[in-house]
Length: 236
Length: 296
Image 1 (spheres, rainbow over the protein chains, first blue to last red):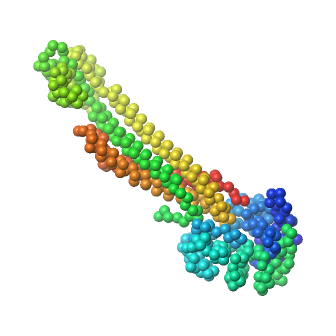
Image 2 (image 1 turned 120 degrees about the vertical axis):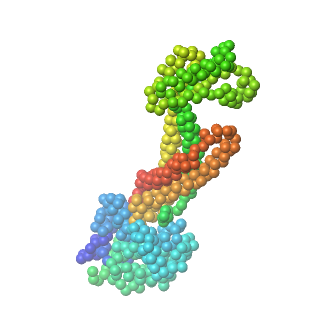
Image 3 (image 1 turned 30 degrees about the horizontal axis):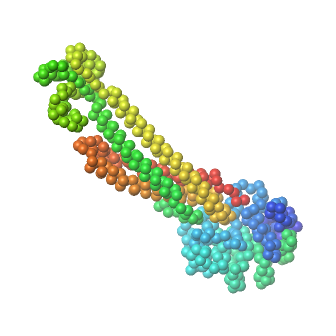
C-alpha cells in the first residue's frame, strides 16, 4: 500500500480500487493509496494508462467497479446526492477536454463555480476579471470559447477550476496545450494555491515538468493499470 | 427586475407561442362572455320585478270600447295595494314594437292588436302575481298576466352556463400551460443533458438547475401572456367597432359595458396571465426534479 499520509489528514483514499468499462479489461487494478491534505502530487503514465480514469473517480464522475474511494473522509459509495454536490463544490477540476460551455462567455464560464456556491454577483464581477487578467485572458472576457485558441481555452478551464479556491484541485493535463512559458506560469499558480492549503493532484505525461519543479511533491506513476510510487516528499 | 443569469442556452420560444395563443383566444372568449353577461344582466334588470298584462280585444268591440276596458283594468290595478306603477303602452307604441317584424305600418294598423300594461309591484311587497291574475281574470276574462318567471329562469341558467364556461376555459388554459411546460422542460433537459452534467460535476445541486428552468419558463409565460393580450385587445376593439357600426338603435348599448366595468372585469386577464406565468415556473421546477437523472 502506498501511504503518504502517516502524519497528515487524509483527503483522498483509494482502497483496492479497480475500474472496468463494460467487459473490457480493467483499466485500473487494485489501486490503493492515500493523499494527504496540503500535498502536491503528480500522476504520470503513458497516454492511455488510466490517469484520466483515476481522476474521474476522484471528481465523482463515476464509481469504481471494485474497492473503496473516500474523499474528505466520506465513502462515496454510500453518499447521498446532496452530499455529492457538497463534495464537488470543494473540488476544482481541470478536465482534459476542458468541458467549457460554448454558449457562455469566458467570464460566465469561469464564474460558474462562484455562482453555484451562491457568491454575490458583485463579488463575482470583481474576482473573475481579476483572475482572468492574471492568467492573460483579460481581453477575452466576453469572448465565446469557440473563438479562442486551444491554449486560451485551457487557461479558461484552469481559471474556472481555481476561482473558488478549492480544497482539492484535480488537473488533467493542464499544460498540454500551452507553451512552456505559460506552462510554468500555470504551475506557479498551482504552487501558490498549494501554499495556501489547496491539495493539488496533476495528471500529466510531461515528466520533464516534474523534474523542473523544485518543490516537495509526491510522484505516482500508472503502468499497466497499477500504481507505483516514485517519489514522496522528504518531510510531511 | 426579472433579469437573471442562466447557465443554460435559451432554446426556442415554443412555450411563449403556446401561452400567446392561449391568452389571445381566452381574452377574446372572456370579453365575449363578459359582454353577453352584461346583456343578460340588463335584460334581467329590465324584466325582473315587472309584470305584463295583456288585454286581448273582444271580437266586435270598437277601439273606444277596448279603451274603456283598458281604463277599468287600470283603475283596478291602481287601487290594488302593493302595486307601485301601472303604465299602459299606447297603440302607437305597440305598432312601433311590431313594425320591424311585419315591415308594414299599414298592415299593423289593420290588425286588432292586444293592449299591454306594464305593472311594477312594490319592492318587498307580498303581492303575488297569481293572486292578482285570479282576481283580474274574474272581472276581465280576456286578460293574461306574464310575470316573466320562465324567461328570468332561462336567463339565470344561461348566466350560470356562461360562468361555468369561463371557469372551464380558464381551467383548460391552466392545464394546457402546465402540460406544455412539462413537455418543453423535459425536452430541454434532454437537449441540454451534457451541459447539465457539467454543472453537476462543478458542484451544482438540483435546485440550482431547477431555478434556471423555472425562471426561463416564468419569463416565457409572462412575455407570452403580455403578447397574447396585446394582440387580442386591438382585435377586440375592431370587432366591437364593427358591431357598433352595424347594430341599430339601442341594441349596441346593450352590448357594451361601461368602460370602468369593462376595465375592471377584463382585469382578470392580466391576473390570469400572471397566474399562468407562475404555473409555468412551478411546473418547470417540478419537472426538473422529476426528470433529471443523476450523472453518477
